[in-house]
Length: 471
Image (cartoon, rainbow, N blue to C red; front, side, top):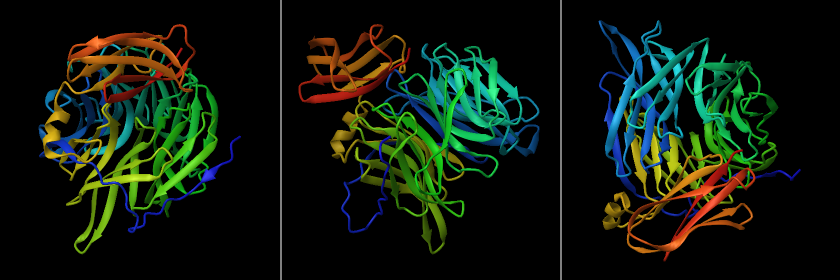
């Protein structure tokens, strides 16, 4: 077992961090009748963004009742709205909340969440829905029992593993949304992600006063391989988990003081849950709600930061970028006129970031941040459709995936796939190509399960995409 390396990074105003990036564009959607928030964002096969969340309104004809509606919105890379979908469950509860979204291999979407109760985000049932690539509904399911869904992952058989709370700590749906099984472990699981060893890691906390930060490793059949507390030497609450390029995983959340968030934190773990490294980022009080590994091996965290002013406290959006060794590179905060915050973040293949959350109590937003500080005339180029990009779908995959890339001008391009040791395992393309979008297939039938990297180089441009082969 590797020796645990524990360190705390305290932000000193005298330390000169890198300048935060600029905002390329922001889209804010106003909901006039009450609370609304975007809970999840997914980078889609076409380079756009799928956003899921919940919004509040009146329940006709009883206008004194509130309800939540689940929504999904699809945006292009440039921030244009392609389509939107929303739904209100017509059962006894009358409300729905969407907590996570994932693109399915056919280009559609799976959304999971909870059946609420009127205007309260209480967990009364597990809810899931399936949409086509154009936003048309295929099916919708509510599975009775106290609890709800928080995060979803694809299963190798085409079904879905859902991490949640109450009676639905972990659930399995088939491709038609039928409940195959569910586990009630007395654990509230907030997130789930597949690992390179064909298993899954979940994070959450005990529902009975036990550890506030738990990790559970499970098989695709729902068997528990192990359950461990986060063991980061702090009192912490875990909100999200992401797989890392070395086959392990990273968790994030908040360091706690008397059950209140104090600082953002993240921790690196091996695939067996052994502790490698921890960093705390002092921005008291603040909380990280999502984490993703960046293209260069560092990490990006998204959440909220609270400021104490003369007129009271205000909460703003906070996005923190780390180096591969977890040192802070920069933190960007904005908003703060009321109750603002971020729930989810993704990084594009061109290293930009898309962040979603709530703006005040009556609006939700999606914002695209540049990879670095930009000149004004660069921003139009960043939103253009024909920039230098690389993406894969499906990902995870078995045994083949499609690598899609765009070139801003005619050029020679070389696309190759490497294993985690940096050995080249396949040359996918090596030729002169026209400007625009190109596609190539990568078949890993002869390769073992694990993490691979697709690397695209054209002239001075280089970008990589992490691939996860699950057999």
